[in-house]
Image 1 (cartoon, one colour):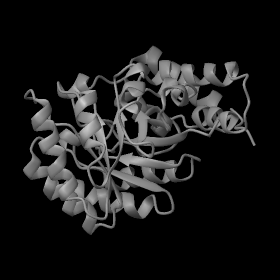
Image 2 (image 1 turned 90 degrees about the vertical axis):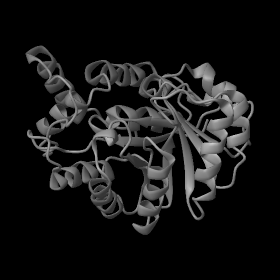
Image 3 (image 1 turned 120 degrees about the horizontal axis):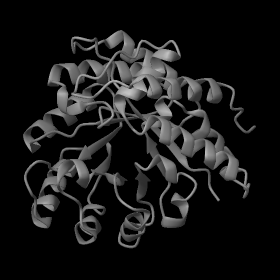
Image 4 (image 1 turned 180 degrees about the horizontal axis):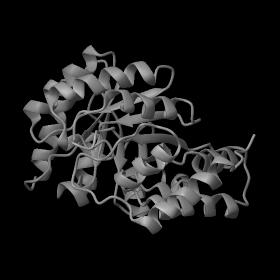
Length: 293
């Protein structure tokens, strides 16, 4: 079985007053660059993209291209309108980005026909870029049906999809209708060892930005053909259960590791004393968790 890709969904550092902390953001990016994963997804949900302005996003993109040099750097350019998305595509291209992700339209309901029209416009604007469709119905209110995915996946420049908040069976449903070379990633960190069974190539994991070793360890074991993954899966489950995909917890754990990760800009509750103790335990444990050779 091929070793699954791990793309880290990266948090963005903000000061306590909500101001962008670009130096802290660079520290987060540098941590990921040395963590053994294949790349970073920048300005996605974990990056609180909906709270950032155009100019701020441009500064973050520039920092990401610099700090993630030598590994994959996927910039999310989704926004509330196609007008903004097209501007963000140009911004990313000008910064030297080669891979982008675009979340589906959100807030208002969208028909299949409008979904196809939207991604056709994205495709037309993305010459020279590899584009990933970002499907997250729980946050957007919209999904990409299998029929729409069959059409969108064959547009020029559209190379893959990131699917969050959906069961693994949804990945298989997409795999059945897309081209063989189409890449599918799940946003379900816990399922890294199972994605290949459903036709996916890996995970895009926010938790790996904080505790990467359980993920790199299990991926290496899979790539080496090991079949007894119980201990490695238990470590992944522990990391997922402790961090819970929560950006406030991610940043607290990063601060425990000496990274100036700041705090969320959005309205997220800070971890309580017990949650902080759990994070401290996980950081201590997985700092010592030896990855496979």
